[in-house]
Image (cartoon, rainbow, N blue to C red; front, top):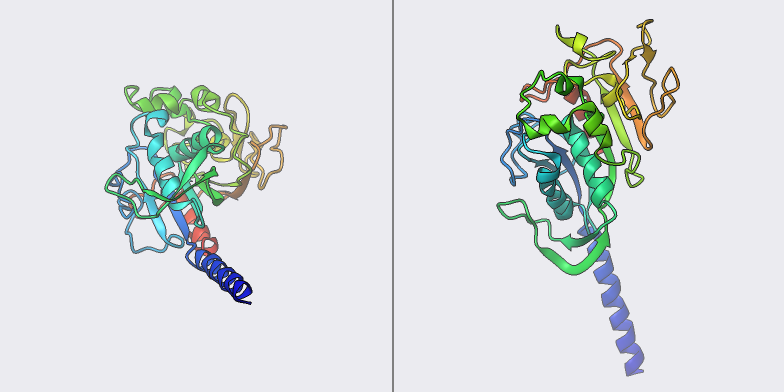
Length: 295
């Protein structure tokens, strides 16, 4: 009788521990900056790059800051540290990328998304690194989806043309041929990338094929596959193949990368590339979508 009672008590304790573990699980929204990072690297509360930090931007929002200057390969550890901190164990993440951080996250998932990750306590030190929690490991990270504003994983012809200083390591990575060959863009670890493509170009948009947000053309912001860029436009433009919504093959036959879906195409040409440190441009559309779906 005593043995049975002890077994019963033990089972109750285990059940309570399991319930407690579920109750303590937390969802986070991670915002990863693009080129010219202005946030404090390692400080997940530093939203200088995006805009006022009191603006709603998804549940438990965190700013994943890197310098936005050096190469994807050398800065990548900052993103992995953030994913380890907030997206392991019982915790799950919504991810938001913008411009060059689309390239950064794609590189991270393709190269490290199947690796062994230690479960962490979501309490970062000053470098943005969290300590191990239970000594348990898992494969990859717990990510619900990725929303991408002005995604530059396909590169931009502004980098090709030398419109930006060629001494920046990141600019070298953002050349169209380089960006598209950097990793397997189809390998998202089965995570959906929802693309938001702006079309409010600038006077120098002749350097960019098809529709563009003044920095990134539709072939990149729309997740169009292939080893090089091409001209894609809104349906109202008769002289260019349409960038299609969702996962549909684009006009002219060029498909999107696997697990890439165009959630927003700027048919009215209202949104440019720039956040202006105030959640503006195409990021404003992304932020609204995140507020409605990251909870």
